[in-house]
Image (cartoon, rainbow, N blue to C red; front, top):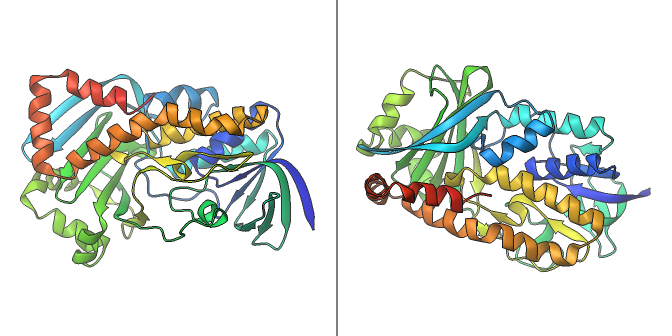
Length: 356
């Protein structure tokens, strides 16, 4: 059984949900296909940079925690930075579900628990439930680990994962409306408050370091015993972890995804290019690129979408890679913090260069 849809969105994370909500506001019929279900926890920093706030406020998506500053911490050095505009904190468990409900109320059809098995060149999609769908335009929000687009273009489907994302929620940690970033040996960690007086603690670690420790839980345990982690250990001591185990996921390299042009298709969010988590702009890029794709799809301008995507996001990906390289080496992070104390404009430069 086959049905034709105006626009199909594959992937129901932040970027896919942003595209769905924008299309709904434009009065466009669309179907979103998502492998998982709502709500669900995701390995994510759960930090919403200032550019996210106006979008989510306009859509009346609750973001209950205000975040006004960040502290960069490396062993015995701390750098404080006040955001020029307020950021927010809320779990993906709550935010994604609210975005889904809004889009659904406004007419977007959701197929959850469903995967796309194959895409033919005429945009006939074979689904895991045995059905097929046809579409004129396709929005791919399949994330940085997806091989769907690559397999269609006959690219290699082997996705390397040089990093591991590690995350858990805690109670009992009072961050007082700030984001804290810790530079650690082979990893960096961010923590900020979310709803219900909980704190999200998320880390990006080198895969070989996690494997050498025997897994994420043992890696975190060993990491906290190192001298560079003294301040982090003190910070976490009064807290209680709310997850039985740390949630983990493999993370491929960051930057642009090298994919060929596909007529009437729009790659958004991490499917097109992933910014390093240390920048705190991953959700921002997901939201804005989803909205951007919806606008281009309405005008059927896929030929110029990719060029404009690169103009908008490429520079911040490059700056993000530089900042991540520094945060993964505590010695470099301490040097940057010391330099930023002498030249405060450096911090402002990194902030501006890694977001809208």
